Amino acid sequence: MYLLLQMKGFLMILNYSDFSPKGNGKIVNINSVGQIDRAVPYHHQKGDGFIFEYVISGEECVESPDILLNAGIGDFIVVRPEEECVIYRKSRDLSAFSLHISGFVLEAIADVLNIDNTYLAPAAFDLLDSFLKITSLYDKYNAGSGVSGKQICEIAVSFLLDIAAHKSEVHIRDQRPTPLGIKNYLDLCICGDVDLEAVGKRFGVTGVHIIRIFRSEFDFTPMQYLKLRRLDKAAELLLESDLSIKDISSLLCFSSTQHFTNLFKEHFGSSPGKFRSLNKKTTVDIG
Image 1 (tube, rainbow, N blue to C red):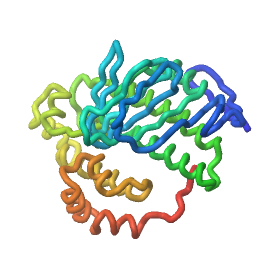
Image 2: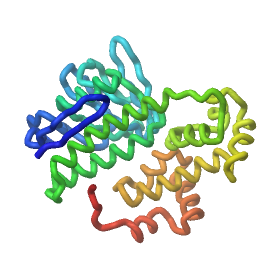
Image 3: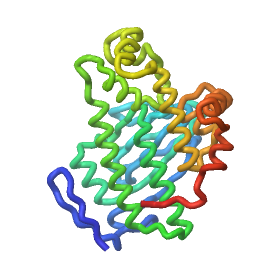
Image 4: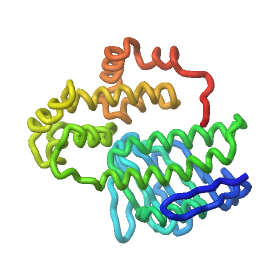
C-alpha cells in the first residue's frame, strides 16, 4: 500500500509496509505517547527521534549548549533528532502530552519546511488538535480497533505540516491592528494566559484601543470572544477526547475547575460532565 505525497515542489511515494508503530518501520516509529510529568529529566541524544510536547499545566525547560526554552501552559515544544538537549520540569505541577516519534520521511519533511532543531510554539492550541488525534489513533491501533498504520502515518505527516503552518502564522506581524487580525491572534492564545493589555502590547496600542477596534466589527469585546472560544473548544474536547474536566479547565486557562463549570453551564445549559455523558459518541469515526 502506498501514499503519494506532494508538497513544496517535491514528490514522495511511501510504502506502508515500512510503517511500524513500534519497532523498525522506515517511515514512522511511534516510540511512546502519553501524559508525562518529567519527574526524571530526559536526555535527548542525536538520533533519538522527534519529541513533541504540549504543556497542560506548570512549566518545563529544554536546555542545550546553544539554547534554553521555557514552556508554560499552552506552549508546544518540538525537538528534532539532530538535537542534543535535556528536557526537564521547571515546576512540580508540570503535566504535558508527549509524543516520541521517528522516521526518515518526518526528517525529510522537517528539512524542507525549515523546522528548527528546537522550536517553541507559544499558545499553540491549534497543534493540540492534531496531537490528540494521533494519540487517539495510536490507542485504537494498539487495541485492535480497525485503525491502520496508513492512518497513523498520514496524521504523523500532517502533524509536521501543521507545525510548519503554525510557525509561519506566528511570524506574521500586522502593520496595524484590525478586527480580523485581533481575532486571529486571540485564536492562537486560546490556551495562553493572556489579558487585554497583553493583546494591546502585541499590536503596539492600548487595551482600550483594542476594544474599540474589535467592537467596530464584532458584537462583543475581545475577552468575551476569547471566553466563548474557550468554551466552544472545551465542548469539543469533552466529546472528542478523554481528558478530565480538570485537565480541560487547566488547558484552557480557566481560573479554577469550579469557575469553568459555572461558565460552561451558563453557556450550554448543563455541566461539563452531563454534557459529555449526553452527547459523546460511543464510537469515534476515524477519517
